[in-house]
Length: 257
Image 1 (cartoon, one colour):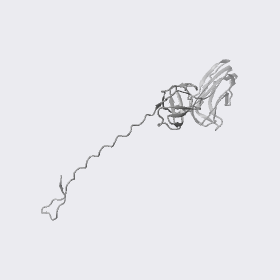
Image 2: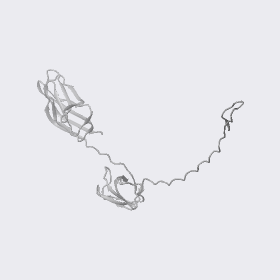
Image 3: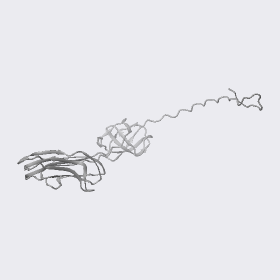
Image 4: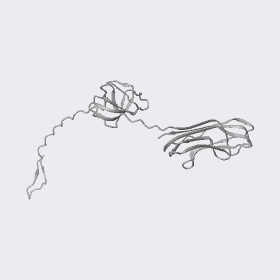
């Protein structure tokens, strides 16, 4: 629609009028792109799994989606790393992941080949268990039954520990307190925070029985490779007659990251 730029009566000057032009033509749609390829393929011949970390050449229907260093999964299961690509073939290294089939097993033609993730590295847990020991508690803090674990790598660990304590013909004039704890003794040293247990003995006369099987609080510990975690204990007052003895001890350090 035409529109005047100004309106006056009378008009002293010639007025300019805007007249819209014809709309342009709609652009034509572009051509359809080429279809993509599947991110998997099939073997085209039988082959046998090689020794762990050895290579094998495998005939496949398509390998253009593969790249060197990629991890592949085949039925079995069997996991491989792409080592090289050829015309209609791929050279694979047998990774022997946990749960994989053994070497020298035939994977038949037509087996599906698909991408896979890498297997996580599992850190070994560290554990200690001693039984039938006979270590008397004293007024000085000491390692119990040689209980210690050494952390293999830097990281976070869930640490649990427990002690069995026996009265051995123990007689006390008053209730004593048993102190149990975890202590890092190499890269510190320092007590492990929150890993403490205190137990009251009560008053006993010629007692010979299991006084307590005591777990320490489970703790998450941020450690350094080489840290040594000891289970230690003491008693506030040594029995007047007999002893309070540690006869079992356990520690478990479980990596959690």
